[in-house]
Image 1 (cartoon, one colour):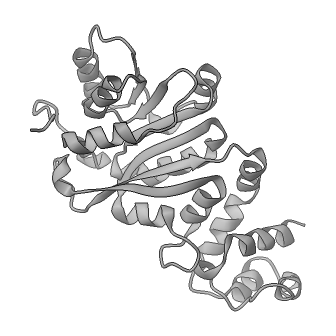
Image 2 (cartoon, one colour; image 1 turned 30 degrees about the vertical axis):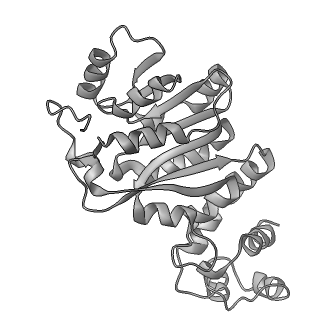
Length: 266
């Protein structure tokens, strides 16, 4: 049995694939082990309301954020008279996390994200992580593996670095193609990001995220070549005293990245 509503059509341009597998829906709703002070979950890309239903059934208050007008209409019809839900027709890429934080405290967010927006939205999450306690988000499996990657792994990237600066990231479920309607071409995964309540970490991210991305833009070059090309020879001597500047970005540890940022920002 699935919870798919055949009367609603997905938007191919957004990479929408509605989650319809009851087991997976229940598993996601059950995995939320921390909650905001007033038992509220902010759900992004609510779609037809399948996950919304399971969240409500678990006793959570749900703020359902959906930007597609037809989906908003369906959500309102589906949950007419239902207590504990607030439906917002809003672009999730412009969502005001700060105002929401003022209402609910540190936020718990969840979402089966449109694939074409998922990486952009993840960076929105990073940019607003000071307001977020936990995030439970669906990604293509390849993207999920990049998020949770560690130094030295092939998938290590700015996305991985930022996830580890700001949170404890983990994949909590692998989701088969058949769990969606229409089925995507690849498998998916649910990533849990447990964000640190640490203003210093957030400030470090804000000050250095562009620099870190720039370093990784030259992933095939050595650190020495990147520094010479982008920042000047004067930094090479300083960094070579404590770092192996023959390394490439994917082999740099968080501590080494932090040292590079400190030297260049002096």
